[in-house]
Image (cartoon, rainbow, N blue to C red; front, side, top):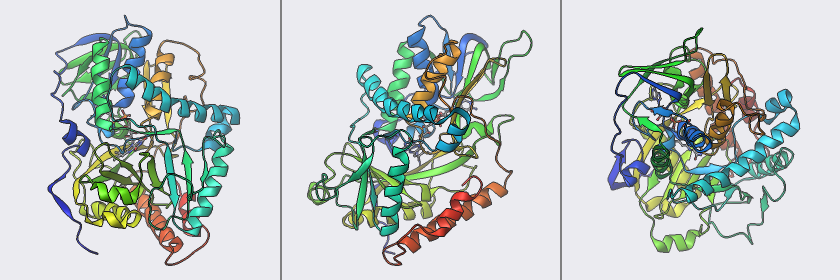
Amino acid sequence: MRPIPRSARFANGGVSFWFRESGLPERRAPLPGDADYDVCVVGAGYTGLWTAYYLKKAQPDLRVCVVEREFAGFGASGRNGGWLTAEFSGSQEDYAQSHGKAAMVALQRALMNTVDEVVSVAGAEGIDADIVKGGMRVVASNAAQHERLRNNIDYLQDWGYWPDDIHMVDLDHAPPIAVNGAVAAGYSPHAARIHPAKLVTGLARVVEALGVEIFEDTPVTEIRPREGGIRPAVVTEHGTVRADHVVRATEGFTSTLRGQHRRWRPMSSSMIVTEPIAPELWERIGWEGRELLRDAAHSYVYAQRTADDRIAIGGRGSSRRSGGSEGSEGTTQPQAIAELWRSLTALFPDVADAPVEHAWSGVLGVPRDWSPTVNLDAESGLGWAGGYSSSGVATSNLAGRTLRDLILGRSTDLTRLPWVGHEVRGWEPEPLRWMGTKVVRGLYRTADRRESQAEGKAHTSRLADLATRMPGN
Ligand SMILES: Cc1cc2nc3c(=O)[nH]c(=O)nc-3n(C[C@H](O)[C@H](O)[C@H](O)COP(=O)(O)OP(=O)(O)OC[C@H]3O[C@@H](n4cnc5c(N)ncnc54)[C@H](O)[C@@H]3O)c2cc1C
């Protein structure tokens, strides 16, 4: 393999390229001591901030605070691929089993509306997050991927996407994106490119202006449920917050909290970004509509064309060992960088000379069934949302609005959605879960190789079917 061209400005970690570009925010003051609120949210990512936002909008006199270990956006919300989409990682069948098919379809439609909700709130609140709603294109580059893409679109059209919401495109007439070896593509309009760090820091600013207090540099050591007449509590080294309701919005970091270590497995996911690509090369590539772009491999990659004409790419195949990276600065293993660069240059061979400027990683929260959840336990006073796996940018907004309704005691269309109160058993203990993940990833990689044009398998490899059936794939 030829060496990966690195920019003279190459950096690895440092939270993310997005924060390097927009500048790390000045830290807000920590919790000054014991305090009392109506609602205390733990974690200042999208989930926590959207919850605070919608609560304050609905009831301006509610006393709400957010307690954050580092700074707003330090987690996945400031590091992700900027894919604001209606995709979610859960199993349609599982949700339908508990609530009926119509409820699952309602959830899918709610996620589509959520894409527009985020775009519209960002516009209304003056958050400039480089948003372009150009839709999403999924590209197949061999016969097996083509067949799978078609089947997947048929499947989704049975679960809430109508033909206008997702369909195959005629590559001869679609706006050009010169993906090497593309044989087919699917398209959904329900997707927008965002700049993750600008969205989360803008949201924090807006929430604060509404009167929510955000305490940074304040690690929470324990969340205590209501006991008898004693209200729920958030315990930190700077003091304890008492509140009527406490919301846990810690996603991939949840396993570090007491009693939560097997709930959502922390999985590290990585990204790279190139230097800005020359206009002559963009003329050859196209991609003028700034659609989000993904391939149809099992170890898929997803990419965006940034506002300043770079390509940022991340992928399922780059996930690494669970645990270990929680709270980290996001330093990325050379192997993950190499895998992403190989995928990037397979899609766009001409980009092989564009130097890589930054690599970083973040942590996702993955439930054993990969299905996200939102909930409020009235007895304990504790609420939570997460387990979004790799699709949390839109889902966290839907979670925030749902938590608002649950906390305010409203029974609404949102609180009736089937992911509300969804429960799943915990993960196996380590090292079993880590070994399982390694096996699944190996199977997917081999399946991708067998389906490649070089090996020419025309249908989805049985190895991928096997991986899909493995627990916690
Ligand atoms: C590399 C990468 C790429 C991704 N790409 C996409 C994408 O393109 N599209 C998409 O939909 N999703 C994507 N995701 C997932 C998405 O970013 C997340 O699902 C979403 O940001 C989760 O938001 P959150 O607020 O729930 O969690 P986070 O943003 O992780 O926020 C949790 C916060 O809790 C704080 N915290 C943790 N523990 C404590 C504690 N003990 N005390 C106080 N505070 C604490 C953390 O510091 C953090 O700020 C990606 C994730 C990663 C890592």
